[in-house]
Length: 130
Image (cartoon, rainbow, N blue to C red):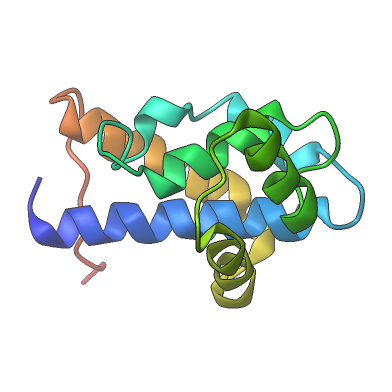
């Protein structure tokens, strides 16, 4: 995977996480339920890395019994024993920088396509339309 594709994939992951956090703040689990049908934690670019912030956050969101908004995800990380220094800040940044909270299904599809590309199953075009 080239650098441009890698950064596009990580931006999609961060947008998805932010969108789930925002959409869950109204008490709904719709965003996590819909995206879990499309993407799994091993579709994240950092899944096999030490620290694995994005896949760790998604894992905690999936494990939440309550809607996975900022507070519940932080609590879930703590319950699971995987809360790290800076995680609460990262959760806040994901919310603050989310480009559009209504596009969580599109972000999930993009993550899945990038994952398939990394596995050699699919070619993803990252250049804009001409």
